[in-house]
Length: 196
Image (cartoon, rainbow, N blue to C red):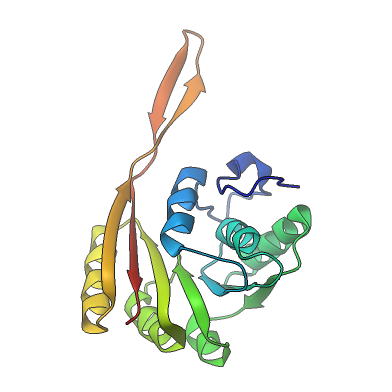
């Protein structure tokens, strides 16, 4: 369906519902670039929501790699499955349940994306660090300042290196009766780091 290698699938190409969040197209592009993906890697998408990160990552790691998409919300799981089918991908496994219970049972990962955590961000990062291969990348999207602060503290405690903080503020055009206006979206802060 998506015939391009570059990330940035338009949001409207994904199946969507009001109840399940999606990582917006431009934010997704930055997160994928910070992950430094390559074919054959094992990737976790924790708090996969609509599955947009899972889809983009699966395309980057090709059929030789594997994405493990986790979410505790049944609506998110069903939506991710619909998007996997829509994009015709076979290298994504969808896992329903609490990340804190599921992560320890997974194989080691080259890259871990952390989105929604239900308030357990620090604990999930600690568990993820144990499953991340040496030299592996972690990419965390945050909206709240308090979450950003706690993420930086735990990454420092776990001695991650090359910690990068990027805040993305996007405005998208919308036609009005008078012309075209730009509508701002909420800023998203993306933290990425490498396990020593």
